[in-house]
Image (tube, rainbow, N blue to C red):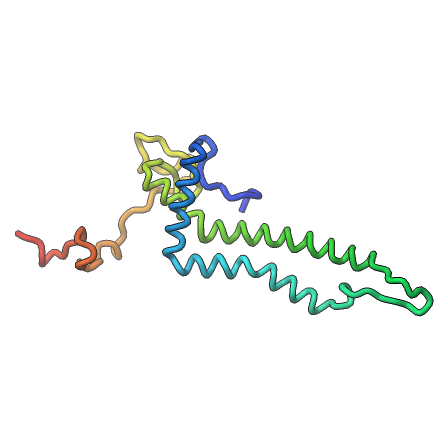
Length: 172
């Protein structure tokens, strides 16, 4: 996490507002089809809230108003200061949790949608690749595009996926 906001794509790629909306809509739909990503995003997002509740449970005297016998008026200045500092710390922690959740669960969906649309970019750093050699290594980070693995070739044919054919079922 190098920035204060996730880098979805290369800054030189400038989609219109409608294209951006469509892109993120499709990425959200892709993410909603992955329960693991949703659960992980939710868990990461709730960590700052749990820290806030834990902090307030451990230090309850910070969030109370003291009334002394000599001065019966309430002195709320320490309470306001504690509340302000706690709120500021919570907002900073929540932002970093959001960045972490976006980078771990959502970013790859946005980049996959861009790749599906034919935008040649590096899946690791989102740098635009030259259109004539999109399979070359990224000049920015050196990553190479993912290639087929042995597990991809071992998939069994199914009725749901007619594009995958088993070698015994194929006509000779």
